[in-house]
Length: 314
Ligand SMILES: Cc1cc2nc3c(=O)[nH]c(=O)nc-3n(C[C@H](O)[C@H](O)[C@H](O)COP(=O)(O)O)c2cc1C
Image (cartoon, rainbow, N blue to C red; front, side):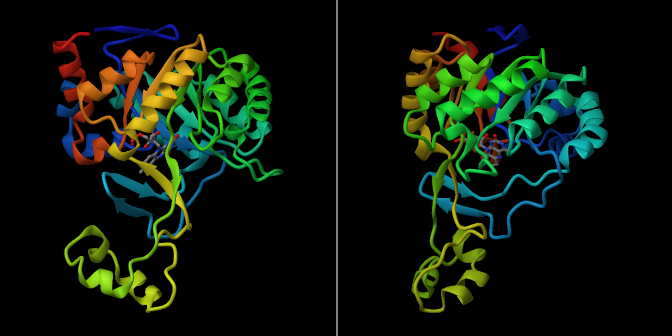
């Protein structure tokens, strides 16, 4: 079941979606037994930014039907903190190659992040999260093919490691964005990131009807805020990103469209819960599959899916 991906030999095609599995915390919880069957064939870090970020104001999560809306806001120690604190820990505990995911709001900022990752032997590949507003235009860097190609072209010379561009699904033509990333020099693309979504704070009457639900149990600030007036956004940041089973069909359509357009490898993700879901993404052209939200429900989902894929070959 081993897979060649951008010069790396991976034991199987299942990796994690950035930000959905904390290998350091999992090691703390599960100890060395985590490595007996590490859930993923490569580990993708959460997004690292140049400067530390505290993340978005709470609440940060909303449970929607078959989905999660999050506005975590990419809290992280910043590049220096990641290199000094997380990287040595990850090097000690990871039994698989490390892919570091980075995000910046200008080409120069992204180049600085990429250059720093390039200098570290522990990092096998770099993933660019381009779901970030350009500081000048306010538009997501990854949402416009012309802008994306320019940024990837500017960043490419700063690393000889595999460069994966994580596309945003919040765009008119994701396949055109994938083509632009390839033209700019990307070695692979990954998709889908979360879909922009809005949840409104429950009205007091709805809260009474939802005793015991995740909304009701976390609802006291919103209950006060809702107060009988017009509903306001639930999440502290306003909108968030939708993930989980509800986005699987969107992911399948976008991965199929991108795979048909580019020659570079594609990492498919979005709502994968079982080997059958992973197989669907592989069938439409993905080389690897990433598991995200499902790992919150079952931290060993990656291992289960990889095992089931191997026992039910195509
Ligand atoms: C709580 C949470 C945090 C996430 N953090 C990141 C992140 O730091 N960087 C990133 O590129 N994607 C991030 N994602 C997006 C996932 O990697 C993935 O693209 C998306 O959730 C779709 O896959 P899923 O439906 O299997 O979760 C996050 C998703 C969730 C749910």
